[in-house]
Image (cartoon, rainbow, N blue to C red; front, top):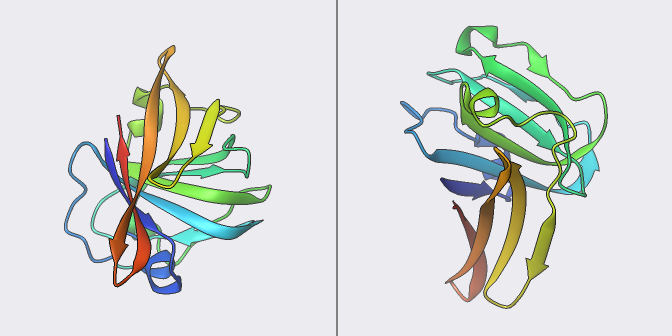
Length: 145
């Protein structure tokens, strides 16, 4: 699975808004500087999504399944702080048995990449954050294997 990273103020605010669809195998990973009760809404969305909140230890703390665009202007907020949020196609969390307390088990950082491993049907799939150089600054991109 491939994911793009939202880690700037504008990308964190925009998310998947104004996109026409979310192809299979694509997700959006939000990386916040602090752990807080980050709220999400469906403003300018055109399709339903799963929203998955993870804490600083990469443990799933809250999931909102199949959130529909017509829920806007309602906001969805976890009951506990989260540092990361993943937006996926509706049904992804159930199909892949991702639940509250699902825990990432391996994280490493190097000059080239950061890897986050999350349980997936008894195996593990990986979110690999690859740092790309853009305007002499490193910019992340993500692939899920």
